[in-house]
Amino acid sequence: MKRFEYTITKYSSDTFNLLVYFCSEAGECSLNQIPSDQTKVLEDILNKQGSQGWVLVQLFFGKDGAMAFWRRELTGKAEQPRNNLISDSLSITR
Image (cartoon, rainbow, N blue to C red; front, side, top):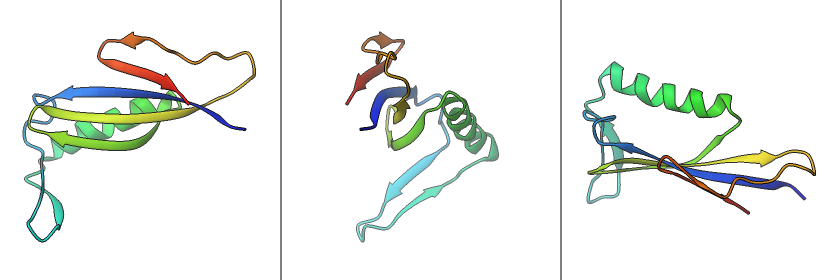
């Protein structure tokens, strides 16, 4: 059976100050006003976490910033999951 480790990272609204995500009353969601430097910030976050084996599960945007949920597979029987709070990152194992 595969085992996974999870982490949650938070990014302040300063990180994505011009990235606007919204849904209309009809339920259509889109990104507007996305300067290239803002998409580069998101790309850098995805690549940094991905290079460490993390896979993005979900990304939420709110007025105070963004929150990303990541998971990666635990390998090896001796490997223990991280169960600690590290600089705004919460890690849990399932």
